[in-house]
Image 1 (cartoon, rainbow, N blue to C red):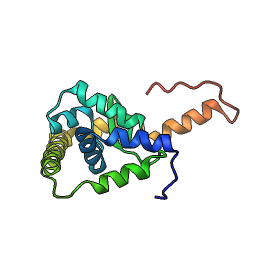
Image 2 (image 1 turned 45 degrees about the vertical axis):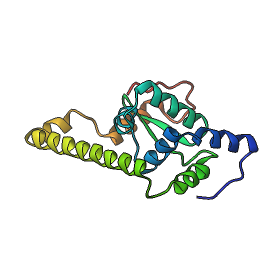
Image 3 (image 1 turned 180 degrees about the vertical axis):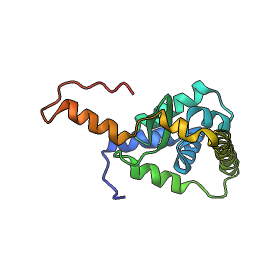
Image 4 (image 1 turned 90 degrees about the vertical axis):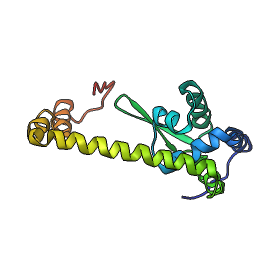
Length: 163
């Protein structure tokens, strides 16, 4: 990733956003995985409103990115904003042997294990019905081809994706 020169105010906003212990922990965690607010409240042992406020400040500063998958919002270390290099640099400066970070990462690994076990259990429980379950969904390529056929090659005014 190429470092870019930041405007002074952008740099200061990023540094101010990260200059708080919980927010620095959030940056470090989001550098290891894409996480939901629920995940982060479990790892940090803090309330949802408090964690959400910290996440908003980090996103506003361009240090974290938020993206949606269905009804879930996931947070990750920025990799496309002007402050992406600053975010990575700040995470790299966090001491590897910090006890608090080590506890956070242990809790993160426990969450990852729980997710993997739940996914494995789902597939184990539904293996006999897997073809039936898959038949409920239309392949994405078929949907795209049907849309192209309906829309044609002309310009598109407004488009609503209803999921």
